[in-house]
Image (cartoon, rainbow, N blue to C red; front, side):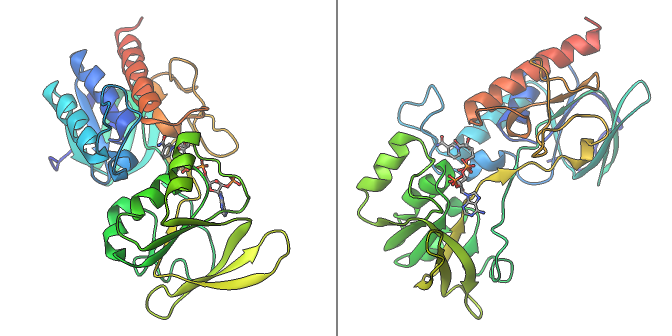
Length: 310
Ligand code: NAP
């Protein structure tokens, strides 16, 4: 990524996951000066998914990093400029919007917020202390460290079950710890997990504590029905209990739902003209790569309309 951010652009895209990259592609093709600000690597959470099986056009599935690299290349091809920057705030000013970041201020006629979500922590003793020493939030990133080990995956949604399936490539045993006795994950994903001989389930269970002196050695599980606790040994604990947005930086300009997701109209516009939101950060029902890219495309088209005064 280039280092110095420009002072002015037509469209600023914050976040380079699927929504941001699609927005950048569409804005670039509309011949708008487009700057993408990203504080990590381009690709977002989708690039931590080992295999994306439900993005149309790839019947065998496609590796998350692969798909995201292609989206980035496509956005660059149409002129989007990528910069590293941590955004602190967006404000109105100078007839448009001003994005304040670690790399300076960027003035833009339209801003598309596509910052996605962050993993939710369990908030139990041992979790922070052992993060990186057996506690992980990304199986694709850390799974290979647990070859022949015994790992736990906490959660019952798509992320948890997809991660559990991926971890069976390395671990000898994967236990899914879920607080109810029914998974939330998509049926086809559930079926794969139930069929996999390396996966078992600790139903009606929550983690009370993660144990280990210098690395994870196990957890204390509590039965949600009886309140009884028991120890379960493990080498790794993968936490996949959902994610939440970090949207404080647009607090003055956009309405949020009670969980902090940005409320938009169906043009992806917030209550501030020229400020758009797209992808997982937006209040909506379905969070998938395919819906994120759709949001990004709509936001960019509407940003163009906003800029040209239609
Ligand atoms: P999610 O669907 O919100 O699932 C979170 C899971 O964690 C739920 O099973 C929930 O239990 C459990 N949970 C929440 N808080 C907990 C706590 N404090 N302690 C223990 N368990 C807790 O989140 P996600 O799995 O990250 O998925 C997010 C979105 O991305 C979803 O829309 C999902 O469909 C999508 N996604 C899709 C795919 C795919 O299509 N292949 C892959 C990954 C993610 P309850 O069930 O009891 O609420």
